[in-house]
Length: 78
Image 1 (cartoon, rainbow, N blue to C red):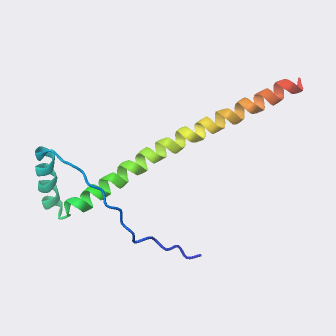
Image 2: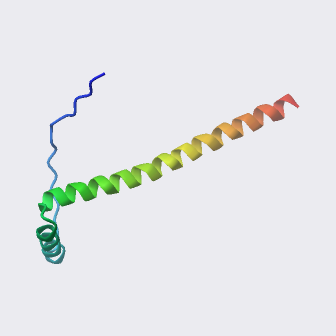
Image 3: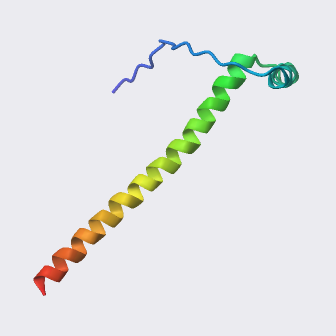
């Protein structure tokens, strides 16, 4: 099966205070990346971390709901 990645980009804008902007530009110059590339990578990293925490929480909720249902079924069979 072949998966094609979309090349469509969505434009977002952010407002940075002068201190953050200056630090971002200096860091990106040092790292040899553009501020846009740095920001996109940082957002991707944050989304991955938060998404994983959300999925874990969701799975725990589903698991406890199933456990409660099984316990209710067992209690009814007594």
